[in-house]
Image 1 (cartoon, rainbow, N blue to C red):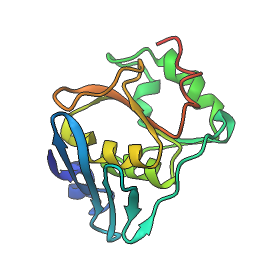
Image 2 (spheres, rainbow, N blue to C red; image 1 turned 90 degrees about the vertical axis):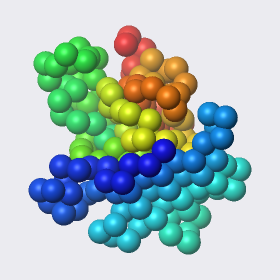
Image 3 (cartoon, rainbow, N blue to C red; image 1 turned 135 degrees about the horizontal axis):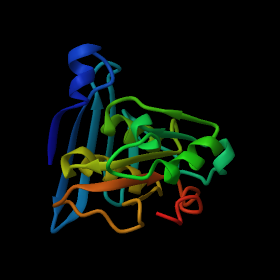
Image 4 (cartoon, rainbow, N blue to C red; image 1 turned 180 degrees about the horizontal axis):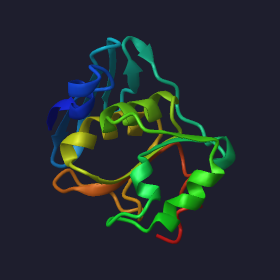
Length: 176
């Protein structure tokens, strides 16, 4: 699965916050993941069972963070009136975390979870090419990757996604 420009709007308007994302899967299981931040020359990469790296530096395993200390990646659209999710579901979570960010590139936000720059990334709908590479990388550092309802992601269909360090957000999303 290849996304040659994840964050197309950013690429066109800002010339920053976009990435190239590649996920290589065999029989539905992620084997290799790559996310390349072109502007900052940062290559996040992982091979199943061999860890994840930022350029040549091994990424540390993720540790659990309490909700009030967490910085999460979430688009502001998901906490306003919209047709995908009731704003009252994520609104309380957003009010309880330390901060939120939206970079406009799913691949970069997923890479930021892997490296600890973000504690979680939540969105309502991503295509497999948006998350395929990042899923391998985040799982290699002990992160949890599911849909918002806790179901495993499949590489063949669009889904809501939750990338996180351990399980801190699941306690807040029990009512989805």
